[in-house]
Image (cartoon, rainbow, N blue to C red; front, side, top):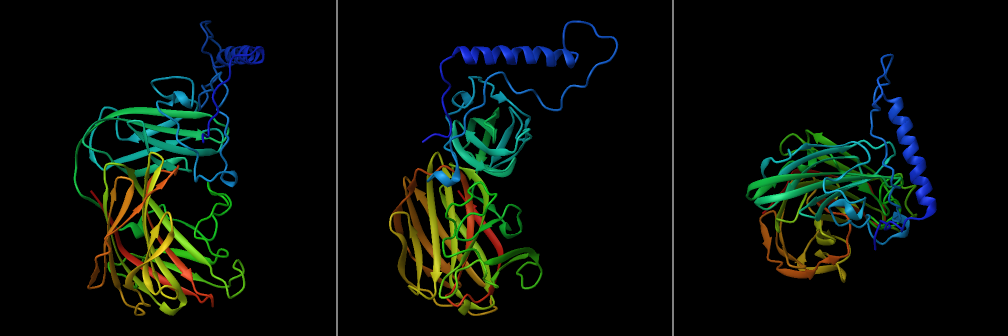
Length: 408
């Protein structure tokens, strides 16, 4: 599938449209004092944003309520398949890349900071490394880490507004080295999103399935909590009533929190290391801890849950068969106690490999492979945490601290 429609052959109507636009540009240019004629009286300041080009915008055919995909499919850069051919990108509206610098030398992960200022509301932004899509957001700004292999690379940042106008900036960078890298204190980082059974109205994925279940419970996330905390800046996740948005008992509501902390394809081994603390363990149906890596139209999902009240095991996610119990028991954790959890996983070709899970002082040799998820169109590396409510819909709280994702 494609979110873009190819340009049609030129017709008399388009020729007339081009003539009208050309006349408009001439008139606008004269009004801005940019003609060859001298104007000694007064000049109008240039507009704060470039005029749209004389070519029509790209038609948008993707919408979350009519697509099985979570985002528009990536076009093939350079952006000639999205806009008229231009090896230097396109400039329908201002798009600024503050970091890295064109021609610069960086280490991996490289910090990418970019922002777009279209006249119309933003549709999305996407990042390519050597023509491979590695990061996506429905917002008009990016501040993330990109894992890129050592060497010379072409980096492209593009943005599209909801009318189909596109801007893109192309940079050349050199990556000198990449080592095992930890992204730390994720519980205190900005960028956390949440959703119940479905993605909420106003989000880029409005109406698509999120945490499943039978509605959206009341839930809040509070960062930088000093007590309880391991280091004075834990994050508190609350789930509770009133349950007006959930089907009456016996039914289940879930809430998913996730943060897209990075992008890239040059890392394949991950360690998800965190501490958690629960105040009412018997109120939870399950606690879920996930890692996701997506690039180039494919997704690798390492999902895990302590399934207290169903399997009574540590379950892991299989994209073909769904939740699959391991042989390892998982019972409700002690209340008001910090529990240390460490997942070690890796990407192996088109498979996910669950290597081992450590909970407290117990290590489980999971050593299980599943096929990855093909045909995924939203690129990122994210960590996620989900709270599942039991059939009585009892409220409870979980605190996370020292949340770290290490990649190499």
